[in-house]
Length: 242
Image (cartoon, rainbow, N blue to C red; front, side, top):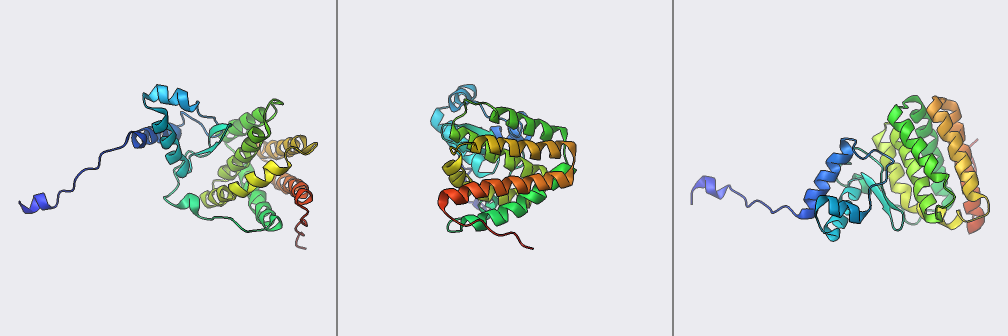
């Protein structure tokens, strides 16, 4: 055996799901599926790609791990980014045993600045994505799970619109806790309507480029949500620093 032969490594066989994931990634990064858009159903995608549903399911898990999409059982898969995160980036922070006040102290800091930067750096694509999500949220036929998924997607889109990838990644790490607590209070009387109204004020300010108003609206909205969650869990609301 020659020296050159010794340096040859066996080529790994590409799995069907890896090939599909690569194609989906290209479609998303090229803008075929835009941020905020819901992907076609798993069955439809499997038919279009000519693969089994199990392969398609595995492919979607792969692009979700890369930070391109977010999925929720019974709701669907939504595009949340058109940029592939660095390996391990989506697992930058894992939140397990923090309190609700701690969560919302951090959330206020992140979302206040995210809204302000989004207003400074607003683009037609971001405007379209935010308005599309707001329109979907206004559907009275949405289940609580669907509304919460869109709620999280809206805030994630705003974080992404800040053009600060680290901020967007940190916000993405909060998702499991935010989803958990949001689902506990979304069915409270008036909570969905109040949340939608708060979102509207934030989005209107961002789209209009009104930085201070966007920041203030984000803080006010987070405070309202925190109060409802704190009441539901019988936990104190975090105090504001002087």
